[in-house]
Amino acid sequence: MNEAETRADHIDPALKAAGWGVVEGSRILREKQCEITPGRLLGGGKRAKPEIADYVLVYRNTKLATIEAKAWDKSYTEGVGQTKSYATKLAVRFAYATNGQKIYGIDMATGMEGDLARYPSPDELWAQTFAEADLANAVWRDRFAAIPFEDQGGTWQGRYYQDIAIARVLESIAAGRDRILLTLATGTGKTFIAFQLAWKLFQSRWNLKDWQAGTAPTRRPRVLFLADRNTLADQAYNAFSAFENTSPGSLLRIAPDEIRRTGRVPKNGNVFFTIFQTFMSGPGETPYFGEYPPDFFDFIVVDECHRGGANDEGNWRAILDYFAPAVQLGLTATPKRTLNANTYAYFGDPVYVYSLKEGINDGFLTPFKVKQIATTIDDYTYTPDDAVIAGEVVAGKRYVESDFNRIIVIPEREAYRVKLLMGMINQREKTIVFCATQAHALLVRDLINQNKTSTDPMYCVRVTADDGARGD
Image (tube, rainbow, N blue to C red; front, side):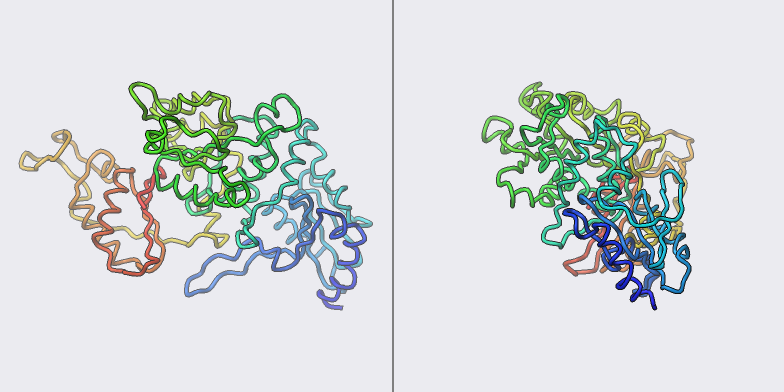
């Protein structure tokens, strides 16, 4: 009996007997539905082998276990290594291996493993998964779990690490944590994560007042998406369009021209989008954010949070301090470094990290190669016959690579380097260019636009600063 026959004749009936696919809210994902990663990109349109579990057990919109199946004549423990690997990747607590005759179970949290007489039912597996969880958090965990992800008719599917990030944030909210941080590499879909979090909070009617009082929810939350540039706020606003489809009028874009036209900040909505600069502006010495009560927002998403909002010395920090009662979620692509230590001090350690390396190995991001570009000005010492356009140069100081575009800028040098870059890349493919600072990113963006030769409407080079600021 081969593996397919073993599944159909023995494993599937055993799962059905345990209630999987029968109990309301329970599902069995099989084969293609269980693709965890598409496989690392190898070039030439080829990929490494994808990671695909045989079965994933889902209950209350939550993945709970993986199952690795083998043919009838194979050892039932042959798939233990695979199922453990998949369970680790999906961050589920339980994993099973079987040949249709016997079942081997593993508790990834405690390390206990051994033979099982049968598969646990959906309710049993749910209880086992959250056995050590704080009972005080269980009510909101169950409320959040009852809300399925919004998939826009099946066209918007989350990736495994996005599901984990969302779950970690919701667990933190249920546990009462008010400062939360997610660190995920550029291009891994942080806006998608923010949308699904807002969707779960909105549909479950979670709000600070009722949560703190321990009472049943009486209203939908007010969520603020706070960015440092209009393009990011606009992109998020468009990505959250599903709210308008189900609850017209729930999305609001806070913009200076609209405030001036109406004479007041907008308040009649649930999900608000704005930028730090708008909130810091206002008539006289009164910033617009001060027109909202400090407890107006229940949940605030701070996009590219390392850009200054969580900086102890940053002007924008006043906004976060003013809305201190809200649960604040910081999104960043930048791992902890000396230059952004304040971000991590403010939000605390990230509840989930998905690195650039992981994204490349999983096949969600494109591998890259480092190519050194040498110029005749890779170090610089000022001489009196050099023209200084702005600022001051220290006479006799030798400026090196780490100083360029942070302390000193030589536009001709950047123009030459961008010209070389544009000749090295395929301009029909998406490209990310990392720069030193936001000002450098904007300079490089303008130089790229001057040097591009592709007229393809899908042409896209994203220019991003080392600190995450973009100049798309």
